[in-house]
Length: 111
Length: 341
Image 1 (cartoon, each protein chain N blue to C red):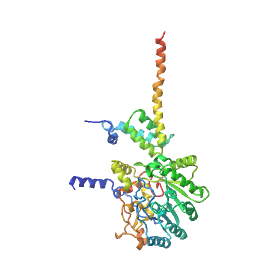
Image 2 (cartoon, each protein chain N blue to C red):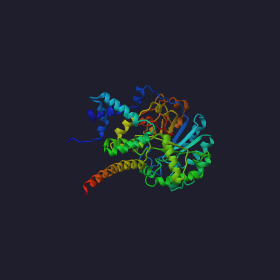
Image 3 (tube, each protein chain N blue to C red):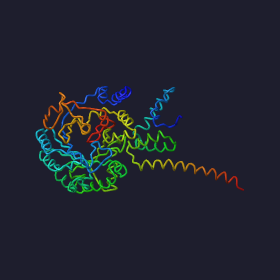
Image 4 (cartoon, chains in turn brown, orange):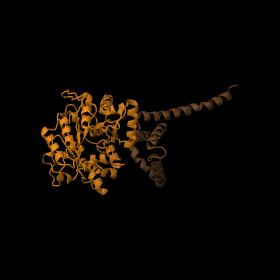
């Protein structure tokens, strides 16, 4: 039976260049520049953002990669867990703020 | 052994062939100097750390003989080029002649560094129960440079690597060192800490981590120190066993290989030190010592403290193997921390 999200498959990320090399090259250059360098944000801060996004987008490859990247850029487990809570609370907030729409519509439905 | 297995082994060797990596990049790494004699006086230790490349523990009995220590002192006295003595173990303070080794080396005008695990101050000798609480005063009196492993500024990672309760004891031991002036500005007494990752990943940049350690240890425990050395875990002995057991050896070696840094290679510590084992044999570094890769002169004769000749030792070819990728990955790694900016 075939399976999804094998950790070994992360090594094949570069294969996205197959059939669309230039687009992949452009992406990896951009990716490297954004995540792999200190800019207005440090690599450490960028890794924490990426860790939060990894959870929000539920990407197992990214969670593994950015857990390691957070450790290798000097974040501690408390900071990493807080970043995940930021992702969680944003998702909860996004869900809850939509209840405004529900309330708006509810008002229209009530005499 | 089947042909397929043999082929796999050959491939595995060539894949992490450090000499080959250097050759392909045109890098030659002969010794540049011998300014440090690093002496491993005992494998006895009060701790059992999960990453320890020495496999040190409270049950080890190997220790340097009085003759060998006397010979090390002669080498230090007769070779002014060797300005530093770096005493390691195990917990080197558990060697019965540790104190006199330090005092006599200092008397010869050598800069003495001790790889002090902090907790030995409180634990004492696990075999004889001798107390080691006098160490801070002893170190200060001899103006020894203290280099102490503290894998993290928090309890979770430290205890995971070094054993339950080690972090709290380390904080107490650091306080005792601070109390006699170690790590305190203006005292001239140097306390450097050593960070190493708690698993198969590379250290964070040394400067940033040092700032974190300083801020956290000061604000939470009121402690201070001078510098932080970041060290990469070597894929040998206990750490290698962990990698094999968890199926992470290949991935870790690939990581080290991918992070090979020529600037870090230029600064590897084996180019300026000699490592001596408890039985007097000489190695290019403490890791080679634990792998029993004796240093040999140009004619292939093993080097020993008992027939030491400076020129012969300086002229040796350094012996490399796959584990050396640990010293050349990223910002580099040595007993003095990162080797490349």
